[in-house]
Length: 282
Ligand code: AMP
Image 1 (cartoon, rainbow, N blue to C red):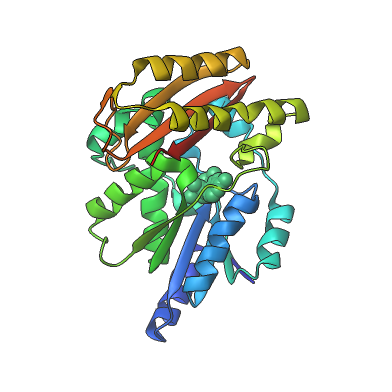
Image 2 (image 1 turned 120 degrees about the vertical axis):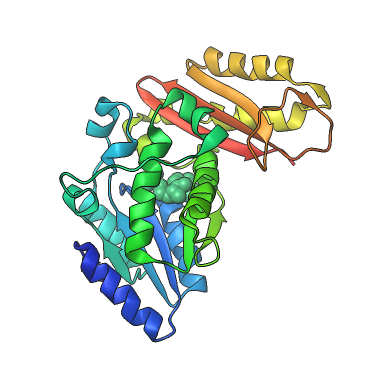
């Protein structure tokens, strides 16, 4: 496995491979890797000549400094996991490699997507995501770009970003399904901060999403959402939102016609740890 820390080294390496006609898959991460991340690497390995993974805890996407300071860092273990699945290349840049001192930070016109759901509760978050992803895309220039459905809104924001960068035809987005623990809890680097009892309790999020899926009927959805919030609160969660939205554009749906494709999305705190998850309802 090749390890690069400098953007120019990675950029030149990818260019050389492209000249040889090789296809490059790219999996960006913030490290603290778990089987969910590894499933993205495996998906990339199946469809590309080379798979590049980046590990970079992006400071600009944390609206809460404490959350950034507490983000788990497990580099040794990450490298072992990446070696275990024969990742071709890992990119671990320093902050000033991605954000050179004095460089102006750009603004992205994300429209409606920016201020709903995660955007509403984490102001500035998606601007930070776009800053890092646009820079990584310029450095790597991958053919295939792998994202997890776990971060549903992020997938939509990044689709929009590719449009803004005008590279939709050059880079394909591939969305891999959410990997879960046996009890249904979506795997997440943040789960490391939960104790065993909390991990068991955290499965309530998935049970709540399943409850929505099983009980949704055409008509008004407010009572179903209220019951879902209640379930989470009874289990000790502090709920940011439970929302049911159009799966294609994330517009909130209050009255369901029984046909529109929907996704249910949850964000809630268990003690100090903020967890998100979602489930397609069809
Ligand atoms: P992160 O390191 O949290 O920024 O995640 C890096 C990528 O892995 C993102 O595209 C995530 O959506 C994806 N990911 C995170 N957790 C999971 C999971 N449980 N299953 C599948 N993909 C995931």
